[in-house]
Image (cartoon, rainbow over all chains, first blue to last red; front, top):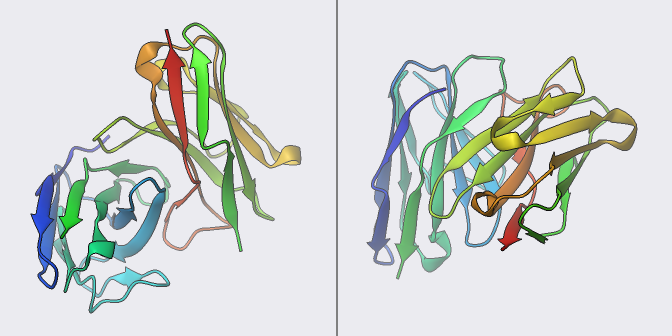
Length: 115
Length: 116
Protein backbone atom coordinates (compact mmCIF):
# COMPACT_ATOMS: atom_id res chain seq x y z
CA UNK A 1 0.00 0.00 0.00
CA UNK A 2 0.96 3.66 0.12
CA UNK A 3 0.57 6.23 2.87
CA UNK A 4 -1.01 9.37 1.51
CA UNK A 5 -1.67 12.59 3.36
CA UNK A 6 -3.64 15.61 2.30
CA UNK A 7 -3.65 19.16 3.60
CA UNK A 8 -5.88 20.73 4.64
CA UNK A 9 -8.29 18.06 5.82
CA UNK A 10 -11.13 20.54 5.58
CA UNK A 11 -11.70 24.23 4.94
CA UNK A 12 -14.45 26.77 4.69
CA UNK A 13 -13.81 29.40 2.05
CA UNK A 14 -15.46 32.49 0.69
CA UNK A 15 -16.81 32.78 -2.82
CA UNK A 16 -14.26 34.08 -5.31
CA UNK A 17 -11.19 32.92 -3.41
CA UNK A 18 -8.84 30.05 -4.24
CA UNK A 19 -7.64 27.09 -2.20
CA UNK A 20 -4.60 24.91 -2.80
CA UNK A 21 -4.75 21.32 -1.63
CA UNK A 22 -1.58 19.35 -1.06
CA UNK A 23 -1.07 15.63 -1.51
CA UNK A 24 2.02 13.92 -0.14
CA UNK A 25 2.95 10.26 -0.65
CA UNK A 26 5.42 8.30 1.43
CA UNK A 27 7.18 6.84 -1.60
CA UNK A 28 7.80 7.67 -5.23
CA UNK A 29 4.87 6.88 -7.48
CA UNK A 30 4.38 7.16 -11.20
CA UNK A 31 0.72 8.04 -11.41
CA UNK A 32 -1.17 10.52 -9.27
CA UNK A 33 -4.80 11.48 -9.74
CA UNK A 34 -7.23 14.06 -8.40
CA UNK A 35 -10.90 13.24 -7.89
CA UNK A 36 -13.92 15.23 -6.81
CA UNK A 37 -16.75 13.80 -4.75
CA UNK A 38 -19.72 16.12 -4.66
CA UNK A 39 -22.14 15.80 -1.72
CA UNK A 40 -23.92 12.47 -1.76
CA UNK A 41 -22.37 11.46 -5.05
CA UNK A 42 -19.67 9.24 -6.46
CA UNK A 43 -16.13 10.14 -7.42
CA UNK A 44 -15.29 11.87 -10.66
CA UNK A 45 -11.77 12.10 -12.01
CA UNK A 46 -10.60 15.68 -12.44
CA UNK A 47 -7.17 15.06 -13.89
CA UNK A 48 -4.03 12.96 -13.95
CA UNK A 49 -1.08 14.79 -12.44
CA UNK A 50 1.98 14.19 -14.61
CA UNK A 51 5.44 14.69 -13.20
CA UNK A 52 7.38 17.17 -15.29
CA UNK A 53 4.56 18.04 -17.65
CA UNK A 54 1.09 19.53 -17.72
CA UNK A 55 -1.73 17.60 -16.11
CA UNK A 56 -4.18 15.67 -18.26
CA UNK A 57 -7.72 16.92 -17.63
CA UNK A 58 -10.95 15.02 -18.03
CA UNK A 59 -13.89 16.34 -19.96
CA UNK A 60 -15.57 19.14 -18.06
CA UNK A 61 -12.48 20.19 -16.11
CA UNK A 62 -10.05 22.90 -17.22
CA UNK A 63 -6.65 24.04 -16.13
CA UNK A 64 -7.74 27.60 -15.38
CA UNK A 65 -10.23 26.36 -12.80
CA UNK A 66 -8.20 23.47 -11.40
CA UNK A 67 -4.48 24.12 -11.89
CA UNK A 68 -2.34 21.17 -10.82
CA UNK A 69 1.33 20.94 -10.01
CA UNK A 70 3.47 17.81 -9.78
CA UNK A 71 7.03 18.89 -9.01
CA UNK A 72 8.29 15.43 -8.10
CA UNK A 73 7.23 11.80 -7.70
CA UNK A 74 5.89 12.18 -4.14
CA UNK A 75 3.96 15.44 -4.17
CA UNK A 76 1.15 17.20 -6.01
CA UNK A 77 -1.14 20.15 -5.49
CA UNK A 78 -4.62 20.93 -6.77
CA UNK A 79 -5.90 24.49 -6.69
CA UNK A 80 -9.59 25.25 -6.81
CA UNK A 81 -9.76 28.73 -8.30
CA UNK A 82 -12.37 31.47 -8.08
CA UNK A 83 -14.56 29.24 -5.95
CA UNK A 84 -18.33 29.17 -5.92
CA UNK A 85 -20.70 27.18 -3.68
CA UNK A 86 -20.93 24.56 -6.45
CA UNK A 87 -17.29 23.72 -5.76
CA UNK A 88 -18.19 22.45 -2.29
CA UNK A 89 -17.00 18.85 -2.41
CA UNK A 90 -14.51 16.39 -1.08
CA UNK A 91 -11.32 16.43 -3.12
CA UNK A 92 -9.24 13.26 -3.06
CA UNK A 93 -5.87 12.43 -4.45
CA UNK A 94 -4.91 8.91 -5.34
CA UNK A 95 -1.80 7.14 -6.53
CA UNK A 96 -1.08 4.12 -8.63
CA UNK A 97 2.03 2.92 -6.94
CA UNK A 98 3.01 0.36 -9.54
CA UNK A 99 2.38 1.55 -13.07
CA UNK A 100 0.13 -0.85 -14.90
CA UNK A 101 -1.25 -2.41 -11.73
CA UNK A 102 -4.42 -0.33 -12.03
CA UNK A 103 -4.62 -0.39 -8.24
CA UNK A 104 -5.09 3.02 -6.69
CA UNK A 105 -4.65 4.11 -3.11
CA UNK A 106 -6.54 7.13 -1.89
CA UNK A 107 -5.75 9.93 0.46
CA UNK A 108 -8.15 10.86 3.27
CA UNK A 109 -9.66 13.71 1.25
CA UNK A 110 -10.12 17.44 1.73
CA UNK A 111 -13.62 18.55 2.59
CA UNK A 112 -14.24 21.98 1.07
CA UNK A 113 -17.20 24.19 1.84
CA UNK A 114 -17.65 27.38 -0.14
CA UNK A 115 -19.95 30.03 1.28
CA UNK B 1 -20.29 5.49 -23.24
CA UNK B 2 -18.75 2.96 -20.93
CA UNK B 3 -20.23 2.90 -17.46
CA UNK B 4 -20.53 1.21 -14.12
CA UNK B 5 -23.94 0.67 -12.55
CA UNK B 6 -24.57 -0.17 -8.94
CA UNK B 7 -28.09 -1.38 -8.34
CA UNK B 8 -29.54 0.14 -5.19
CA UNK B 9 -28.24 3.35 -3.67
CA UNK B 10 -29.20 2.09 -0.21
CA UNK B 11 -29.11 -1.45 1.11
CA UNK B 12 -30.14 -2.38 4.62
CA UNK B 13 -29.46 -5.75 6.25
CA UNK B 14 -29.66 -7.17 9.73
CA UNK B 15 -26.53 -8.05 11.63
CA UNK B 16 -25.53 -11.58 10.72
CA UNK B 17 -27.41 -11.57 7.43
CA UNK B 18 -25.96 -11.95 3.94
CA UNK B 19 -24.65 -8.81 2.29
CA UNK B 20 -25.09 -8.53 -1.49
CA UNK B 21 -24.12 -5.36 -3.33
CA UNK B 22 -24.61 -5.40 -7.07
CA UNK B 23 -22.33 -4.01 -9.75
CA UNK B 24 -22.60 -4.25 -13.53
CA UNK B 25 -20.27 -2.75 -16.09
CA UNK B 26 -20.45 -2.07 -19.77
CA UNK B 27 -17.44 -2.91 -21.86
CA UNK B 28 -16.64 -4.93 -24.95
CA UNK B 29 -13.37 -5.90 -23.32
CA UNK B 30 -13.20 -7.38 -19.80
CA UNK B 31 -11.95 -4.62 -17.54
CA UNK B 32 -10.15 -4.61 -14.25
CA UNK B 33 -12.71 -4.42 -11.46
CA UNK B 34 -12.52 -3.03 -7.96
CA UNK B 35 -14.60 -2.56 -4.85
CA UNK B 36 -13.78 0.28 -2.51
CA UNK B 37 -15.28 1.12 0.88
CA UNK B 38 -15.64 4.59 2.33
CA UNK B 39 -16.35 4.96 6.02
CA UNK B 40 -17.88 8.24 7.22
CA UNK B 41 -15.51 11.18 6.88
CA UNK B 42 -12.71 9.01 5.55
CA UNK B 43 -11.03 8.29 2.24
CA UNK B 44 -11.49 5.19 0.14
CA UNK B 45 -10.05 1.83 1.06
CA UNK B 46 -9.59 -0.97 -1.43
CA UNK B 47 -11.63 -4.06 -0.49
CA UNK B 48 -10.67 -6.30 -3.39
CA UNK B 49 -9.84 -6.34 -7.06
CA UNK B 50 -10.07 -8.55 -10.12
CA UNK B 51 -7.57 -8.31 -12.94
CA UNK B 52 -7.02 -11.76 -14.37
CA UNK B 53 -7.13 -15.37 -13.21
CA UNK B 54 -9.57 -16.78 -10.69
CA UNK B 55 -12.95 -15.13 -11.04
CA UNK B 56 -13.83 -15.44 -7.34
CA UNK B 57 -11.82 -12.85 -5.48
CA UNK B 58 -11.46 -12.64 -1.73
CA UNK B 59 -10.81 -9.35 -0.03
CA UNK B 60 -10.44 -7.85 3.37
CA UNK B 61 -12.99 -7.98 6.19
CA UNK B 62 -14.58 -11.19 4.89
CA UNK B 63 -15.81 -9.72 1.60
CA UNK B 64 -15.59 -11.48 -1.74
CA UNK B 65 -16.73 -10.82 -5.28
CA UNK B 66 -17.19 -12.91 -8.39
CA UNK B 67 -16.46 -11.73 -11.90
CA UNK B 68 -19.06 -13.07 -14.31
CA UNK B 69 -18.19 -12.15 -17.85
CA UNK B 70 -21.43 -13.51 -19.31
CA UNK B 71 -23.42 -11.25 -16.99
CA UNK B 72 -20.93 -8.35 -17.04
CA UNK B 73 -21.22 -8.33 -13.27
CA UNK B 74 -18.96 -8.08 -10.24
CA UNK B 75 -21.25 -8.38 -7.23
CA UNK B 76 -19.86 -8.00 -3.72
CA UNK B 77 -20.91 -10.40 -0.98
CA UNK B 78 -20.26 -11.15 2.66
CA UNK B 79 -21.91 -14.13 4.39
CA UNK B 80 -22.58 -12.40 7.69
CA UNK B 81 -22.91 -8.65 8.15
CA UNK B 82 -21.31 -6.89 11.07
CA UNK B 83 -22.24 -3.51 12.45
CA UNK B 84 -18.83 -2.22 11.45
CA UNK B 85 -19.62 -2.93 7.79
CA UNK B 86 -21.94 0.08 7.64
CA UNK B 87 -20.35 2.35 5.04
CA UNK B 88 -20.52 3.50 1.42
CA UNK B 89 -19.33 0.97 -1.15
CA UNK B 90 -18.10 1.86 -4.60
CA UNK B 91 -17.57 -0.40 -7.57
CA UNK B 92 -14.98 0.83 -10.07
CA UNK B 93 -13.47 -0.26 -13.36
CA UNK B 94 -10.22 0.31 -15.14
CA UNK B 95 -8.18 -1.55 -17.69
CA UNK B 96 -8.12 -2.21 -21.43
CA UNK B 97 -11.61 -1.02 -22.25
CA UNK B 98 -11.35 2.08 -20.10
CA UNK B 99 -7.69 2.65 -19.71
CA UNK B 100 -6.31 6.09 -20.33
CA UNK B 101 -3.40 5.89 -17.98
CA UNK B 102 -5.02 3.76 -15.32
CA UNK B 103 -7.91 6.02 -14.40
CA UNK B 104 -10.86 4.57 -12.53
CA UNK B 105 -14.50 4.98 -13.42
CA UNK B 106 -16.73 4.70 -10.37
CA UNK B 107 -20.28 3.56 -9.90
CA UNK B 108 -22.76 5.71 -8.03
CA UNK B 109 -22.12 4.03 -4.73
CA UNK B 110 -24.27 1.93 -2.39
CA UNK B 111 -24.79 2.88 1.21
CA UNK B 112 -24.94 -0.18 3.42
CA UNK B 113 -26.81 0.01 6.70
CA UNK B 114 -26.62 -2.79 9.26
CA UNK B 115 -29.43 -3.13 11.78
CA UNK B 116 -28.80 -4.73 15.17
